[in-house]
Image: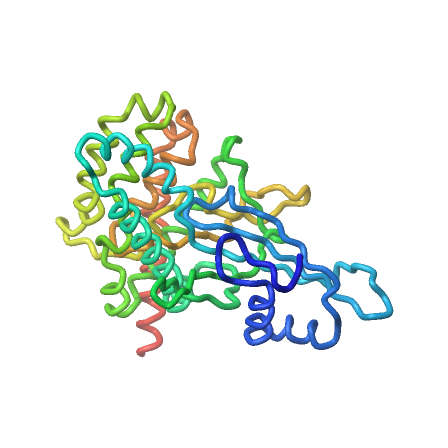
Length: 346
């Protein structure tokens, strides 16, 4: 891969990434100053992302006398660039018939998707830069980011640490085990509890509104998928989408304070520490993809995680247990925060 190669469909070149890494990371800066970049390897990971084009860049360093590629002289980063390619496919399924029947303006709908993507990407930048360090949850190191701004010809990107050496995704085609479910629920509960200590100004910036809601035409496109499960519950899905905001704010009816809700909590966004065989262990590592983060009901995260990630038989058997784990972990963290604050004030 050459220095002037472009990442995906963006305007960003490898040379630009290198310059930004030199400005933002001391380890990379030292490696680059003492060695020559012998090779740059690109790995397309875009199958992992729904709203992003994801690339792993591996930089191989050496000197002019020895071109041997050594593991201790490599530097890996993950580049995440927003794209409408995947969600546009779902949007297109619902818009094709509508366009021919009622003259829906195709360009208008495309612009809505672009606006949604811009706000979702910029929401994730905001979370990484201003909030996540106060949530008590481990996240990859963010080397730098650029918000998306079409008027200024900025495609938007996040360049972060490659955590694949320490963490692993659980294979979505394999059954997640009880210990993994428990570890995820405990971590999310503690994150929700810790989020209540954030200043109100952060919650004001995380109001659940059109900033992060997927356009309904895109959601309705999902019902066009040739899936027996989706077709079976098509009517129920459409009813839920119509009540989306009411569901997110349902806790307010009972006087329950809002928490920072991840918004897209499922197994494909969760890393576990690797075990000795290099597979996902039972120990929670990190939670990725914060584009849909919002102020809302924390149980929405738990509901999404359980219904999308946990096998039906296990969920039926342990649903009450999982909710009790969340309740206990949330309360224990709240009590710990209260006692710590009380002792500090004393």
